[in-house]
Image (cartoon, rainbow, N blue to C red; front, top):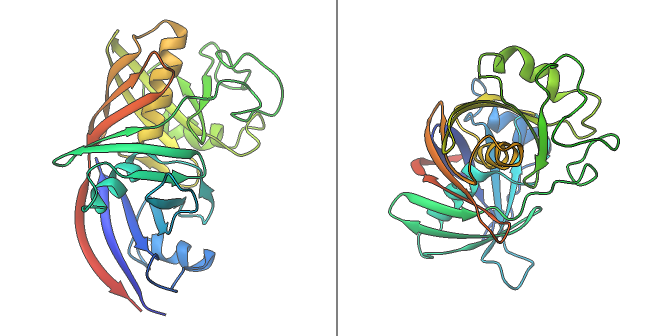
Length: 264
């Protein structure tokens, strides 16, 4: 089997994009793990699989796979990359397992409507009913996390970014999260500005996490720590997040095409 791919990144969060719309070559789970491996394959934070849409309102169907082979419902940085990949369309609509995502493009700056956050404990999901603004996760008191879903589960802590590498892998697997969780570590710099690092489930610490930035702003605004529109500094650069009055979360940031190749 021969696979053509495009390597892309959004603020250093890198992806292998495989377009199967005109090909019968679809990678297996084992091959996805191999392709994501930075020593044995191409190397990436996630593999993005494109196929023909099954929804009338969509231009393409997008699936996101972590390096461990597990599938994520959404990825903000990858969604921006897909919008850039579809060069013939100025505002493609992406079909994902998290719903339809509308996009727009100005040069290499891409805006994605990430949809409305899911705030109920069952929608995130959590293992049992609790206050989603003050999660009872052992080991993080007196700084409880807040949680929401942006198509994938996120928990955000607001006591700085210093514990991302140590607490991230522990909290990802906390019993409260039946599907594991992405863990954000935020430092509030002003009502419209924060610093964020995210430990992604199945991928580890990444230079940027678009859905994590959206979740962090939603959780911070719910806590009264920031306004609903906020600039988010991540290791790879800057994202602009706007939780609008209609409930949808809009993310703006760059996307970059790195190279193309063929693997057999």
